[in-house]
Length: 395
Image 1 (tube, one colour):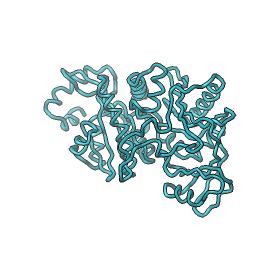
Image 2 (cartoon, rainbow, N blue to C red):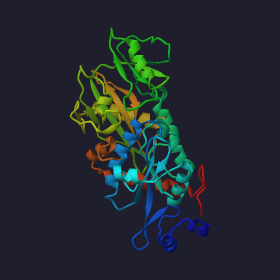
Image 3 (cartoon, one colour):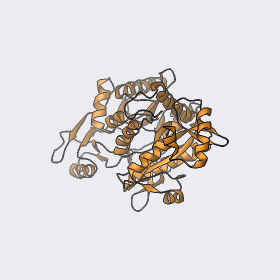
């Protein structure tokens, strides 16, 4: 099998291949050749989107910032793998505009051969569209590439706001009153409430409907993004806080310092305008300034609220079946009671990503968090020794 595999390699790589395999200290884990034959594990950064230009833009922004930071470190060989809006794949040398334009585009079957040749030790997913958070993560499972973070089934559950809130509520987590509506339905709930596409992220399609305002226009806007719309009771503005838990080596869950967004009665919910800067075509090109509304990490949280937030986050993490980490949007009412709003089960490991920002306040920099979770993913593959769902490890 070694001879067959070497047929796809250059002569130089064929000569170096036996040395690299002998030098490897991680059994069953792919490594890339460096220098005089030493090797490093290959980490695949899966980014882009075949669903929309919007999500391709979101993904590229986060993946670029992660890779810019990751390549400064010398622990892994970080390889970009991009899915394009036309369904083709590419493996740019970096995620600059020039490198992405120069990279060869290929069909999925050729991309699979390329991935198998790279034989990644782990994959970091940076895709935020629904297929990217579900189908493409499952695709990594089929190829026996361990993922950093949450698997496809957990992402599918968390992306459906109606289903995920029902699951965490069954574990004792407080959620706002809500109902689900379809085209032609009239909500039973009276305003004020939020109309949200059930399976959409980045606050797209969300409208706060106040008493006396047009309900139908809010529904029409939400239905542009999904066939199901969540009608959710508006929790009066107290505080808007994001909380996260990070799995430790012993399996315990550490709550990271919270992050608070400062809103006002005139602007009481976070919408897509608070998050990303887009061009004239609506494609994200950068992050919104943090001065928009303002935010603070670590948030000023007393012991009573901290205990409630940790209980909410830990229960939600376990209820949803999360792995490695989880992040939640929480609304705290004027009486100090926190409500689960939604789960945000992804981390790009960009320096400005929320979990990295929180971890920094707990004394863990981007490098330590990134390497801890990548190494954990690699260890999961080693522990299974090739006996796992999907394609068997080639020997």
